[in-house]
Image 1 (spheres, one colour):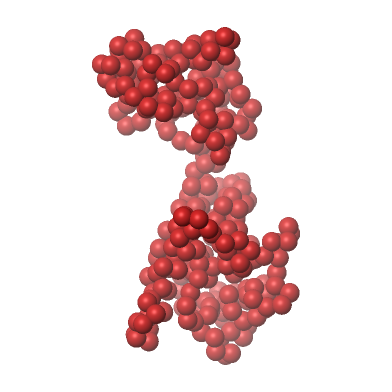
Image 2 (cartoon, one colour):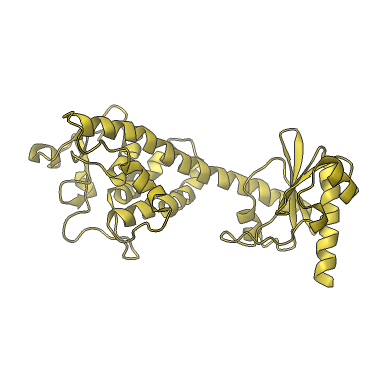
Length: 308
């Protein structure tokens, strides 16, 4: 059944039905969004998908609300919002619409669910509340700033604001899918590079890309640095020990910190060295050979420090 209408509630909007609308409008571009609480609209029918309104969850009837008693819960007991329900039933088709390889769809679906959908579900249900100085920068909060002002007298203000916010929300969902799919492509490239590297301590990649997850999955604990081209230069980058840590497996030499061009060349002895961050996690060089030479020096110093 191809719906003619996508029905959600009228009035003020929240992140969950906005993001649900992103998914549904891509899958059903000819369907009309109807924002209403009128019984004739929020009653299931064969020509519509109803979400975040209607007081029922029945996928077979194409109604996806979460405000009723006995509202649906995830397998782990956490609550769904309408976005979680729409993502559960339509997310894979949405991902496939971006030509993501079939073998990656489940992984992308799970990644986006955990990193984007679940936080929206929890905030919308009051299960968590963004706090602290960054609270206003949560996606839920940012999307709600796009609501009209309380004293906007335009009777169409809510609807106009909803559709403007929908364009913003769309960019976040599309970016989440794109980023997750790109990480899987990167993992394949990094895995092959690890196999080619063998026991060496420096991993060379053909371009900049996410590399730490693939290194961890491969159990390549011996790797200390990554080298790859960037525009016209080459980068030498440290490898973080974990997702939530800035600690590196090995730092670049302290004598290089904050130096550029001739000063870095003098300190390192490598012609073509151009930059080392003061934090000692990244350096740059004009050529591949110079970047690899910097990497060799950094590896030797790191191993000597460990042995001392």
